[in-house]
Image (cartoon, rainbow, N blue to C red; front, side, top):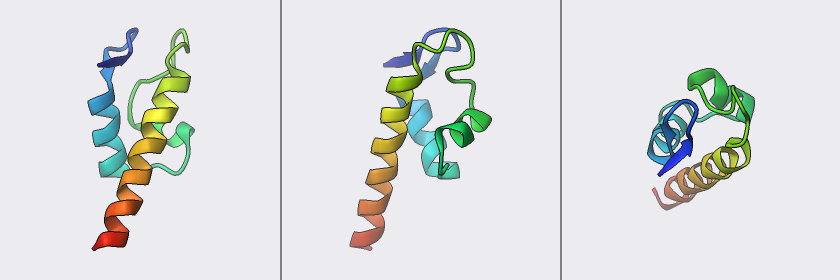
Length: 64
């Protein structure tokens, strides 16, 4: 699903960037990919996707 229509960024792309770079803040995520840099309507959803993926990473680390 596209999260950012202006830059054609999908939730899958955000999740992949989070797995690869593990950003600590939304601003860090924005430095890795063009999200929420035009109209900004996607910022809330993009942040939720980032936080969800970070939680998934923590859960996997606790299992291993």
